Figure 1 (spheres, rainbow, N blue to C red):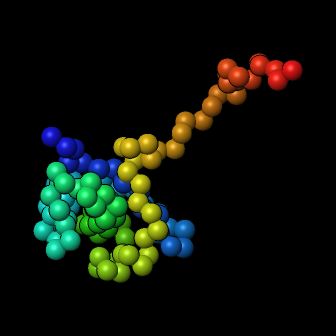
Figure 2 (spheres, rainbow, N blue to C red; figure 1 turned 180 degrees about the horizontal axis):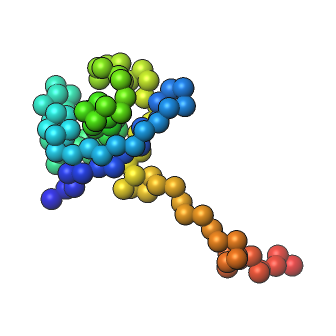
Amino acid sequence: MTTTIWRLRAELEGGKSFETVADQRDIAAFECEPFGVSLFNFMARPLTMLRYLAWHAGRRQKQHDVATWEAWGDVCLTVTDLDEGGEEAPEVDPGSPAASAGLSSN
């Protein structure tokens, strides 16, 4: 079965951002919207679904004050799925140079 938990980061206008966790409550709300699709078909509208999940979960958890989905479209710049490579890359240990660092172009 497709995952029913998403860890998301929303970037908003004005430099604001928040991380949230969307779950089945948020997915069910998306599926009931006129533009919504079943979780099993969400790839038909992946950006809409991720943006909706971030809005709905963030509102439910009181992480933002955007009251309507329509208003969310005006303030939300991006939503990143943190479980799909959205997390920041780990810092490289300066004591361990990259394998190519010792190679010369001569």
